[in-house]
Image 1 (cartoon, rainbow, N blue to C red):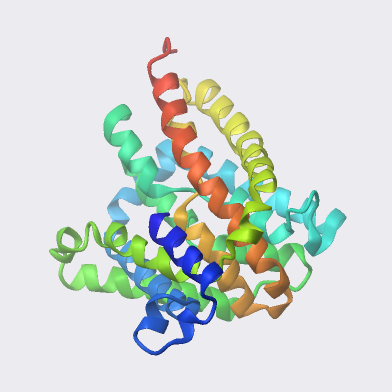
Image 2 (image 1 turned 60 degrees about the horizontal axis):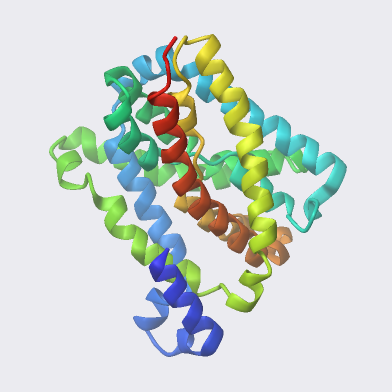
Length: 296
């Protein structure tokens, strides 16, 4: 978030700075965003372990499937009744990307403290639904344009390359374990280059509303399911409900695939960035409170 803020300040005060010359342009502009996202997907693929997928489906499958269903149903309803414009100044692009988002990094950190080995194994399944093709498919399906299979292939291909690399040499998992964390600041520079702080300040109120919508649509049903089906305290479900930093980049990715979404990218990016920060603070506090409550 700090690199994003620095880049946004530069963009607000000196809009032409990003176009100076390479490699400055690549780092401090959106031109490097897609390359970084591709690297992210490769790194996620490297950490994927197929033997953990069965355990994830058995012990966390209901929660993950429910989250997917919530995202799909919400996206279809919003697109049908409100179109691309959404409501209350929040575009359907921002709504679908946020509602469908999950933060595997926050989840694994919290489960290492408050969960067990089975809860940690759910990280594999959560990584799968955290890929950008999920909101892209939902937006394409709900708008009636169908699913753009080439866009799915373009997103899954780097992920599959990562899986292949790990199969060829499993030692790379330990080598690249912190790769995503190291790259996040650089993604922040690229994303901040398209943020105008004057416009972003106007998005705070709508960003907070977006966070409330995310909390109501995700936390309430998932925590109730965790308590009454899995007979747990609800802390595992709460850990799933956090907006990932990668979600900020998805509006740009969607605009690359379908230019219809281009007018909504800047506002969506600012609103999603606010929900990323807010949920990253709220989720750990909620998980800690639920984990320390009287268990079932």
